[in-house]
Image (cartoon, rainbow, N blue to C red; front, side):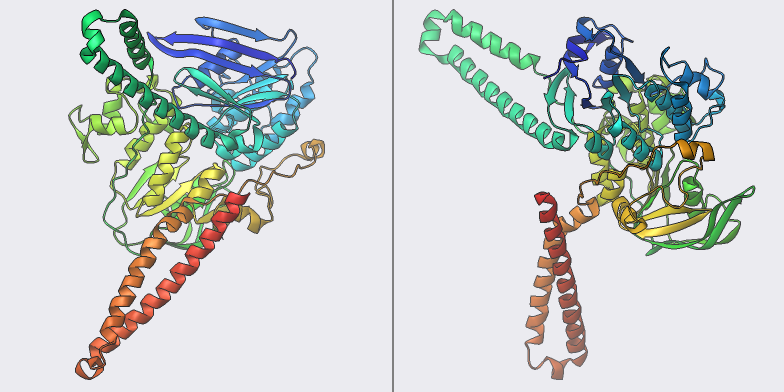
Length: 602
């Protein structure tokens, strides 16, 4: 095996009296693609900063091969010291690096190079920082949440760029599809320590679950051994006479081992306040249009959204996703066309812009709208509600400016889900959430009895949640596709960048652009909608079979028609409907079961 370009050994670091890292290792060889996985707050970003030389650990060693170059992408890039985006990217080049590559990357990422940093959006800032990290083609790339605030075309472009790059990379990301497509090694940071798996992220979750199950068994054995030793100390005949010092010392060591064990932090217990059921029709739009200046954002778009629909809205940043959703939900009036909101619709919205949070406000005030620490939120005491979203009691008075990106994301989610609703509008809910919290959010949305409109750039999340996708076709036209993100790609011909969806480039940049690379086909997964159907259909079929048997008993009475013709006709119609429903349920279950077996066999 080639010697590592970068090696961190036995890294320890304490912040504010609390150990964050206790024994963390990280090794990166030439060309290796590593994903660094862990919960929000576990120390992933800190470990990456140590690797980049930005933080000194309290203990441990950091070795970099002489002459090896490293570039680091922070979660929150700072361009404030530079006049333009090109000046920022150019400042990251070495003496022998090519400035033309810097311009090429900026153009590929939809930037001109003359933008003033003070006027950049979050997505534009992230694209400039990516260009700065990629331009020198370093030996090692350290990328902290590189897909945050990026649109789908840019994420897929970045995947292709990293696949072809000679640089080794360490990736922190919540984007499952991105990690599955790119990584070949997984490092799991858990409770201050790291474990390494020489397989990509696709194998991580099974491996993690097995490791935690083994750990739980080991702790159970340790607890039983401690109980047995304590019993011997108290009641053993020999112990009462001589108090065997060796056995007493062993018991003390076992107790110390148990005290030193740090249990896994519990999962978030996300819940949503549901309002009364809406009418069957939630939103109906007829030939709506919206133009800003001379630019059509939405043109002649019609749709019907029914109760329990899960709609995904995708497209490039600035392509009109948020405008379309605001038109559909009545927040924004169309220039022409009509929007009708159905009966008894109550909407709760998660906004993407976290700048709406007052940085000087406390966590409790943000959740209770200033009603204090004894207020109720979503039917629970605010302290209980905070705990469900993994906030500790001591954080109640924490100013929001001190929260991490992941904590701010959970706070915004907690505020949105506390509002009673039967229509959820979620704008980029996955940004900065860790994978475990994403799992819980997916389960909640699968069980939500209302309707969901979801704006997201997370392909895996879309495939698991939605049953229809609205995607732009260019010049203000939007089309509705059945299924999830992969289904939409298949219907479009497999390329989301078709039909003018990506920002236009100059003729010069188009000529300089590398030929398109075929996207790696992502492994098909059951969506949460399909999983839910697989789990619930057997019970539904059993209920239908019981109903059919009961109706058959009623109709077996040969005197029924003569005695009560209305009852006979009602029972006959009910039997026919139940048999039709059973046949449809059985067919759907069989289709899903076959699909599940095909996926398991991949």
